[in-house]
Length: 262
Image (cartoon, rainbow, N blue to C red; front, side):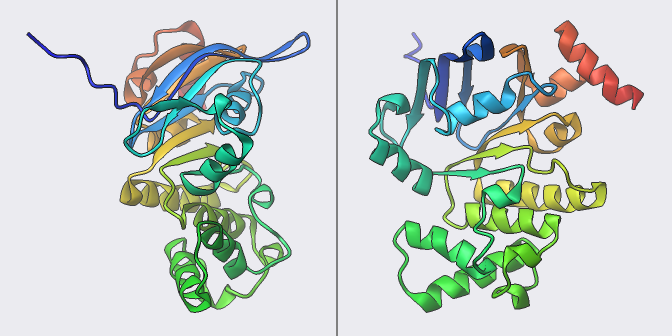
């Protein structure tokens, strides 16, 4: 006789909805994320993918539904029932977010080193020498000249800002990272460099990631599994290669065929 199935999901959403008056952001969404997994949420503009991400990341309060997360080896907890202080602690320690616009994830008026250092201080680091040393290490890891540590992000290119935001987010080694179109708006050559940086760090750190993108090429490169959204709902869920090679839903087929014809 087989025993009960062990539930090791890191994050689970069920019945999730966000309604703005007559407009549906997302509706009746259910998904699971496993430790070390990269899950891409794909769809065209207006499909609801960014609304979903913001609900999962605590940036928006859902109209209804449950979002459960497992801290450490403990039981799943509904983050919507946590206190504001508990959610802020979670966002500062175990979670990270990479915004499409790097300025949304950086402090543009302080130095690159201070941007990385602030995240370290938020989790208790206090030794200035250690903080600066770690900031230098992370600038090098994201291929930013360490001589620019005292420069402000406003003097950086778009690609450098995005890589700095990645360093700021990952320096504390969060368990779960939310990424909203992390290469959107960048030139193709710059996108490739940012993607290469992301892919290497995600694999090295064993991160769990929920990635929102309209670019199926980005999903193919980074994601283990994919959900396809249309009109605020998930219409297909499966392994990335499986969906890209043999999409089942008509909408998924349209997305994939658009890539083939491009």
